[in-house]
Image 1 (spheres, one colour):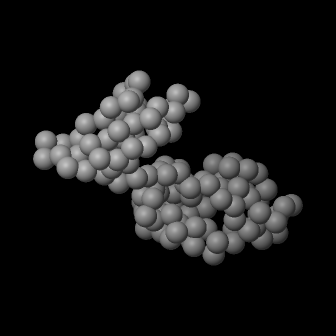
Image 2 (image 1 turned 60 degrees about the vertical axis):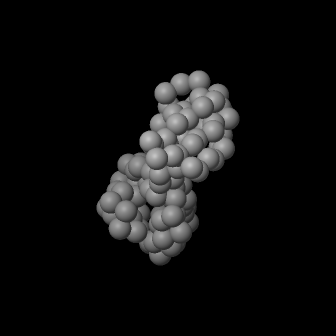
Length: 117
């Protein structure tokens, strides 16, 4: 049996969760909504995060443009994602929603611009 305590980040409530894994699966206590249960189980199986950062822009009005992954990526892949982001040098103009990398760090997730330049 494996037990982990965590604070849910899916809504502003910030519930203190206790997630237990045993031979029958997962159980979550401390949550006040279904999202807390889903979050706790996901964190035990494979923690995921949306990555936000910035990329250096060639020929833009500003030297950098903010970006984020279109969906959450496995927490274990964040370093690889940030490494690829650091190597990107997109050319201006860039618009909010532009896909700057279609499959960042082989995660199957797109990297999109969150600002205009």
